[in-house]
Length: 306
Image 1 (tube, rainbow, N blue to C red):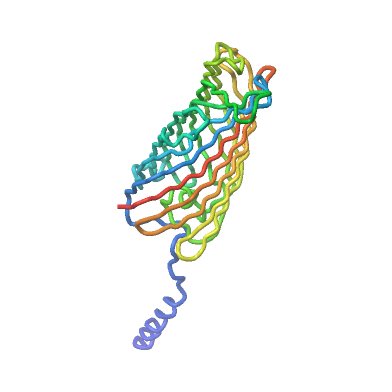
Image 2: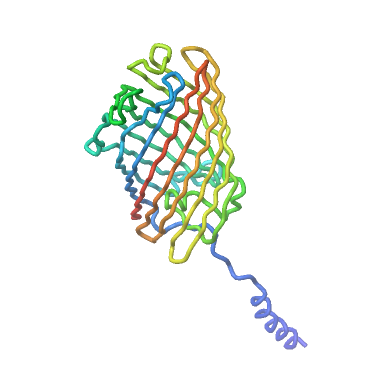
């Protein structure tokens, strides 16, 4: 009887093993290398149309930016989340300025953390030198405007419906591998400061300077299509609304904004790359005037992991 019971137990063990589900690979996976070096090239365009000046837009001219940065996985642990770091710095090449436009000096730096489904970032951007067409003059007459704009913000975006299947890092930072096509609702906000200095006084700022601090609420959606052999395509759209105050005038401002971007690229074990198209449109309502700003960029990123 003992031998019969032992035989029954041994016979049942394979059956139990067969009933166990095989362990599945995670939908979002990491790379073996924790350190990555980042190489960036950007073509940027900024257009500002202000009702104080008229119908002619002010256009920046900084055709080419080069940048470098690095990323590091699992820099530290906080709130039971692994915080991974990405740092970038970009500066324009002055000799690429097109004929007929004033030189534009610009730089941009960004710091990004990714705890769980959150994307927390800080950014500082400066660009100067604008050109505009002269009213009632031939098309080739250009006026140079001595104006600079500084943007700085802290942003927090939550991938609210990612459910472990979607990560923006896969498409825009090339630091994660997404297994299948998936998307997510985007919810978040940011604290932003915008400083514009108009040394030519054409936009009727108080003392030729406008300093705006704003608080934003952002919502949108993003989706990544995953193809064979490591290729992908991401689409991204976010609508933002902000309330703020002009520091010098103690006046209220309202700022709606819409941003779209897309990324196409390739993820490899050691080398990855992408091409990103960005487009943003915002309206600033202050006093009796309004200002419409369009920002466009074509960016390429190459990542080497070590």
